[in-house]
Length: 283
Ligand SMILES: Nc1ncnc2c1ncn2[C@@H]1O[C@H](COP(=O)(O)OP(=O)(O)OP(=O)(O)O)[C@@H](O)[C@H]1O
Ligand SMILES: [Mg+2]
Image (cartoon, rainbow, N blue to C red):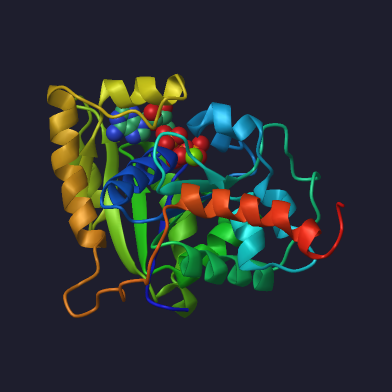
């Protein structure tokens, strides 16, 4: 693997993994970095809740993972570019998919996918599912990631989740990444100090913002926020972003000429239309 960023966003159920993944993607895209988001949740497929219009006409991550072999071209063909920004593309399960829709895939397939994704994008963001035991994609992403943003919530459910799952990710194979424990979606009424103390190691706190909750409910997460609450969130979020940037002296090599994802996907479509003609077909 080269040294471009692979960031896994993982945490307890409903801790804000999808929301944080999308906001990070927007921030990297604003720096003109190509971002590929992998949405791992096969239980509640999320791409239709992030970009409903584009998702309706797009193929599933499940189908990509069940191809006989994987190439960069396959990943680009399945990646769903967004209309709102040319620098973000998504791969995820489709509305209606379930555990039986596609053939099972193995660890090698995930390693292939993540390796190809890293070559294609400047930043690969993996919106992991909480339940690692049921999801090889999230598990391998946690093993190969450079950074793991680990989201905790101020509730007993999150405490119980980590009591069960932290021992599972204590294995040496999960120690490659730098882990950033974050207290997420903290409401003013919640005793965040107590939870910080119990979880231990929390590096920063992302406050609750009513507008963000509304964005999720209305499938408008790609909109930008404003207002007083949003300013407090942005401040903490910027700290997170700084921690995720390459350290000095470890910067990713500048890629040659890199087209935005949207243009890459369009170019692939154009080439595909030319292929039959080249082979003398379609005449
Ligand atoms: N900072 C925040 N401010 C307001 N609401 C938030 C914030 N972070 C998360 N939420 C809300 O919490 C809920 C769960 O968020 P999200 O779906 O991103 O979590 P998740 O960890 O991806 O959940 P799942 O485990 O179901 O995949 C959503 O309604 C979302 O809007
Ligand atoms: Mg989610």
